[in-house]
Amino acid sequence: MSCNHNFIMPPKDPIIGFLSGHILGLSKRLDYFLHCHREYGDFVHLKIASLNVLMVSDPEAVNYVLKKNTKNYTKNTPAYKVVESVTGKGVFTQSEKPWLKLRKVSQPFFSNKQTENWERIVESVCADFLENCKEISTKGDEVNFSPKMTQYALRVLGETIFDKDLGEHVEVFDQHLGKLIDITNKVITQKLSLNLISKMKQKREFKLAVENLERLITTFIEEAKTKEHNPERNMIHAFLDAPFEVDHQFLLDQVKTMIFAGHETTSTVLSWALHFLSIHPEWQERLCKEIEEVFSDGDIRASKLDELVELEMFTNETMRLYPPAWSFARRALEDDDILGHQIKKGDVVSISPYLLHHDERYWEDPFIFNPMRFTREETEKRHPVSFLPFGLGPRACIGEKLSRMEMKMLLSTLIRNFRLIPSKKVEVVMEQVLTLRPLNGVHLSLEKRD
Ligand code: HEM
Image 1: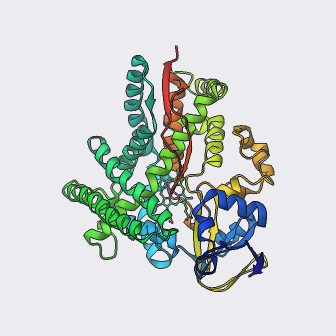
Image 2: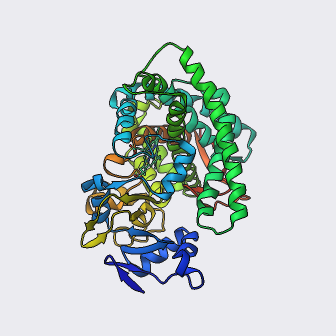
Image 3: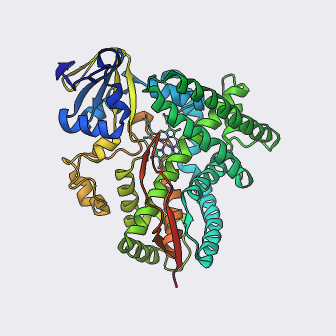
């Protein structure tokens, strides 16, 4: 074990470590992250060939990088380059001035002015979902709900940001995007592999998948151009009005970015929430009681979802255990000092919400599901940065409010109307990819409540 920059460096891979650094360890992903944190602490120095990757897991230090000295840290990192090859140059991957001009155009779509519009949309998309669930419960079938969560998130996204009912296209979209996300996952893992043939095959498949997705979005952009101009409801129209040059590739990139950032994240949290509900019937009953108290006249209205305090605790606990963005990184523009730990210009700082969320110093029995950790009293006792599902600082998630609303609307609709029964046939196993998702989906059956 050696020390550099005041970070601790774990031993390198025994055979190829002198060339590749910690690449073999890193290919084990979460397990290696957990191991490094447990064995070497909050400041760990890893190498990927000649690149310094500094893992920072102290909440104050994370606060410093993402918020206090955010101007020194950009998204120009290897992982964000892979994301950029899918999304192009959008608000999610860009830094500094190019990011600021994109954020200015995107921000109004997530402001309080949109709340009523979102409420109308999530209520209507959930009404369709409820009809579908009634059929499922009548047939008594066991169904994989994960694809349904993806389609739900896509529909909400289409209607709230692009004023477009993706209803009829949802399956094709999901198919192209799902393929692309699968390949992106493989590309990210392959980046850490030395198998050149497999890398080339991935590259070809990846290019084809991007082309397929772009072809679909192109028809969607062309259609938007023929519709009545509405820059407050349709982000494509807002970008067409922007005070800078906008070409077709630029529009493609912005649409791909929003879809990429906004649908898989929300849908995986929903899938996990359904899983936890199904294996914790006591929480189903508890939450159903809360929903019936808040909506005593029977109608679930999106404008009152904030009153569902226990459902919020439940969703937070789901995101604590399985944060979709389980790790992200920044690159230092200049030398810096993070709480006495030196960073050199060009170093990559890696931050893992998963490690923060499973740190025993802030969470007792961190691998156990327990929404009671999120009562107000418990939350006030903890470091605020020990819970980081939506990131922090100026680059924090732009869609947090929307996704919290859509998640609560769907969950309360489901809980109020059905009991969720877990599958006896299909086991739920976590898959570590871009997000942390259930490998074979979440299979459930529904039993209608009286
Ligand atoms: C449960 C759902 C979601 C989670 C857990 C989540 C998580 C995150 C996180 C952690 C970041 C910051 C990444 C970093 O700092 O490197 C982020 C950024 C972002 N998210 Fe989300 N997100 C969710 C839903 C959404 C939705 C619904 C949308 C859009 C409709 C969205 C759009 C974005 C965008 C555009 C950014 C980049 C913001 C910027 O850099 O200015 N997200 N998200």
